[in-house]
Image (cartoon, rainbow, N blue to C red; front, side, top):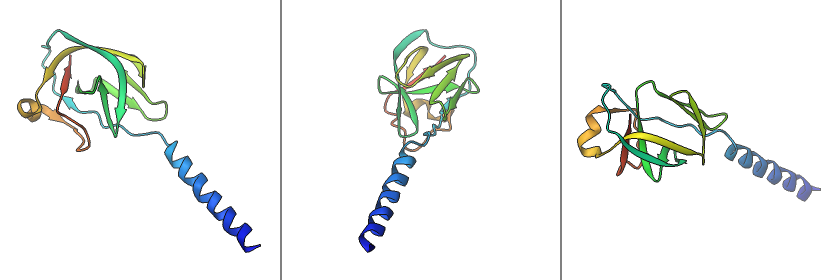
Length: 122
């Protein structure tokens, strides 16, 4: 009887861990103050989520302030009125940046974001 109780307790712990993995993942969206002028290059590829950061082709996306929102429940990005789910193609104009040169204008950057390659969306 004691082993049945232990088995039930173990199953509850495993179920609890699985439920936690299914929780919506939060995203911290790095932003910059947009001055109305942007580069006209294009970055296109599937929307990726790593840790709490959004990428396209392993390039960290930095959005203009107040232009992007993350819906944790539905795991979708809303950018310029368009909803993009993880894995769907995101097509962005803008330009690549170097964190060393652009970090003074970037806000809300999570320490867990890989910022070797960044894209300043326009």
